Image (cartoon, rainbow, N blue to C red; front, side, top):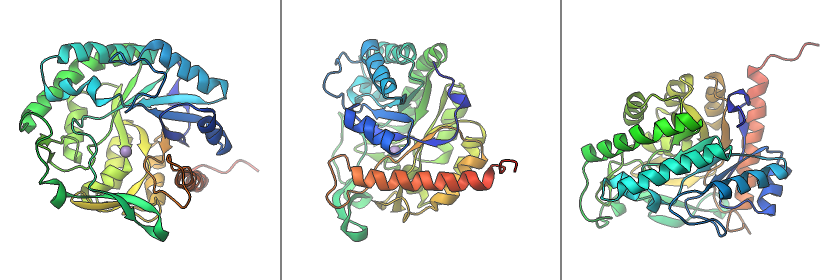
Length: 338
Ligand SMILES: [Mn+2]
């Protein structure tokens, strides 16, 4: 497997669900060298066995490499692969075996990072067609609307049992991640509010991330730092401090570089240059704490005549990040000797 610790801080193509010729060419045309895939839904052609199979993963990696790209991370498996683990329900042992085998298969296939979340009820939004700058289409969340939602599962769940479920999983999955050299990167709950649909959302603040990292201090355990979610937590406050804290420990494995306006009880997703945060300061902070992973756009607004995958929105965001990176490097790296 490639030694990712020697790679520079960089921008990657993110959130593709398949490695089509078009996506791979799009990445290369933007000058990128890494691709992250999101398998929240399994794409056509992948076996659905309750886990990610070695041959499918190897086929994906070699397909990327045939185009001169690295398949740097797989983010997510379908929630039904580990819902019983998250909720502590009967059948979790079988799901654990499958998740352990998924980690082994990622390692065997040479894919070094697995992004995961612990959100049994998934990402919530209450608005899906919100016009933002220039009429671009985005989405938003209002806790006032969401708090009236019915229970997502059979009953109300409690914070203590969700922590117990998390610990149970980490104690059993991280040793496998260590053996196979696969980094597990934790994404925040989105939105980061205490509870939705009767299920507590653990990864909603700094304290709980700190607690998780301290309880499971494996070198294979870190953050998928979703700037959008961290910005949602306190309307942008505390973002730079959290990057400082976890980044200096080398615990930020990669970054979702997007932003919102507002905070977790009421926010709208927006273009990366108009949110709560200053993206230049965010990237500068990442650089200064020694972050050397990849950054992807994550969610983007739908621009005029955009595709279903939002190519135009993604091209804007990715180009913006590439420009910022060049600026950040220019002021933090010594000029070459004349
Ligand atoms: Mn994200």
